[in-house]
Length: 243
Image 1 (cartoon, helix red, strand yellow):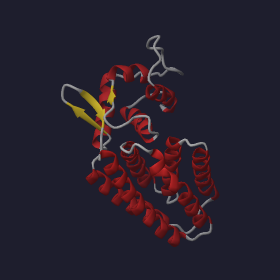
Image 2 (spheres, helix red, strand yellow):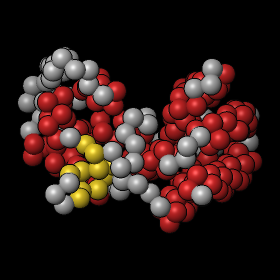
Image 3 (cartoon, helix red, strand yellow):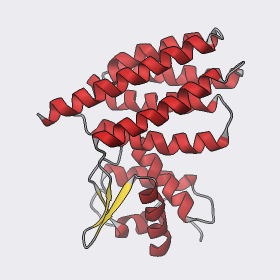
Image 4 (spheres, helix red, strand yellow):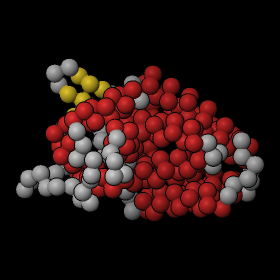
């Protein structure tokens, strides 16, 4: 199905910001649209923080913006539900999933397995990979300097994605992409993004320095502690907000 270079205007009213982001991502789709590519667009919006837990996704709006059939969109919804990112509620529609504490423990267990193993498996790093990590760290530091903590969270997601990519395993990259989307849903549950991300700006820089020096085992050990601390602080923040 052919896709236009830009989405059509639905009405005179300005669409919500998350829908505008989805519209911009239409350019990521190939000329022949598939449910998998549509799922990729929505997954990206979750990872970037545009789609929050409990948000209802309108079929009508998405069909119009993405220019896909209802069946294609519903297949994409099924894929994302299988990944734990969306839930279908009978007679109500499709919603972005909200995670509980058991989900968080499971997510971080998988993160430690994937990320720490990826770092320990390294014997060298190509210049392009190190440059990407450096760009991610710089983006986080810049966002921190201007107090944009949502952007800090996005830069942090990209840092961990590129960290895993150093292992050059396409299958691991695919798992990580889905895992980080779930992580962004977890971060949404905490009122203060600054509380979650501020101290990890410097810790990302420290990890980058170790990787640049070839100290892979030390970097893996620090990353393991980093993830343990992150889980503990995330749980503490969620409980504090709930109280």
